[in-house]
Amino acid sequence: ASQTATPATPIASSNGEICLGGQVGRFVGPGEIQNSGFHGASDLPGAFSLELDLTNIPTPNGFVGVAAGSTWNFQAWHREVTPAGLSSNLTDAVSVTF
Image 1: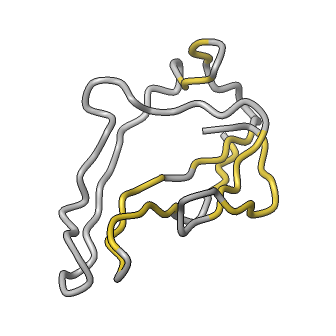
Image 2: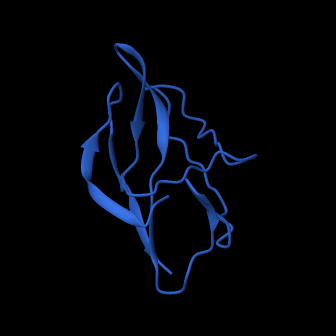
């Protein structure tokens, strides 16, 4: 999560690009790391969801509340199986104005 969107930037040792900049917070608390159920190229794509507490969005400096009219950007980083082995990738980023 971040209030700053940036042009897509490649991530070393990943197949994806990050679109978040500035102060990037990670949802790594209990129950926040999800499993989509997707296990490989032959499986159908999986999905996950995370209900957010808008009074406690993670940032590097602690949790903050979302202010009315503010825009937040969200992106998921996930594991990925490639012909070369395990890697990671990122979803497209989503911007939400509250």
